[in-house]
Length: 293
Image (cartoon, rainbow, N blue to C red; front, top):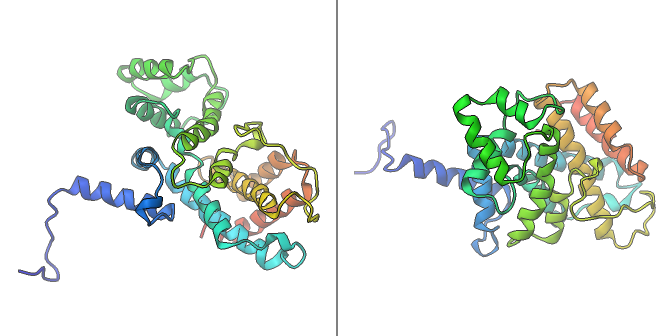
C-alpha cells in the first residue's frame, strides 16, 4: 500500500539512515558526485568523525561560503583594477574544497588509530578551553572526568603529545596533520586543494609545504603564472576568513575586535596590497553580517 500523506514512515535502520545522510552531506560539501573521483574513504571517515563529535565541519562550511562571498566581492568591485581577481569556476571550487578539508587534521595524525582519532577530536572540540597557555595536562584535567583522563593521556602519549606542552602547541599540530592526511590519501583531490588546505596557518609560521612567499606586489602581472598567483590569494583568503570565523563564533568577539586581530595577524605578509584588500572585504561583509550567508 503506498504511503499516505500524514502517515509516519518506518525506517528500518535509523542509525544507518543518519550515517548515510551525514556522508552525503560531506560529499555534497566537497562537490564530489562522481564515485570515480571521490576523495579517499579514509578522509571521509575522518570527516564523519568530526561531523558527529564537533562543530568543525559546520565551521568549515561557513568558511567555504565566506570564501565564495569574498571572491565574488573582489571580482565585482576590484577586477577592473586587478584583472587577476577574475576566478574560474574550477578555482572557486578548489577553494571551497580546501575550506571543507582544512581542519581534517583535528582528527589527529594520518596514522592515528580510531581510538586516537576519537580522543583527539574530543580534546579539540572542548570550546570552553580558552587560554592557549594552559598545558595539555591542565586542559584535560579541567575538561574531562577522572575516569576518562587516564585513557586520554594514554592516547596522547601514543601520539607523542606531552602533557606539559601548551594547548596552543597541540592546536597548532592540526595544520601539519591536515597536510599529512591529504598527502597520504590524495585520491580525488588536486595538488592545489591539498596545498591551500594544509597552508591555512602559514601566517603563524606553520608551513608544512615549505612554501616561499613572493615579494612582488599585487598589481604586478609577472608572478610566474597566473595560477600560482591565484593560489596565493586563495591561501590568504582562507586564512583570514578562518581566523575571523573562529574569533566571532568560538571566542564571541565583536566584529571590530575580530577584524582588528585578523589585520594584525596578516600584517606580516609582504604583499600588503593583497592582504589589505582581503581584510577590507571581510571588514565590509562582516559589518553587514553577510560574510557567511
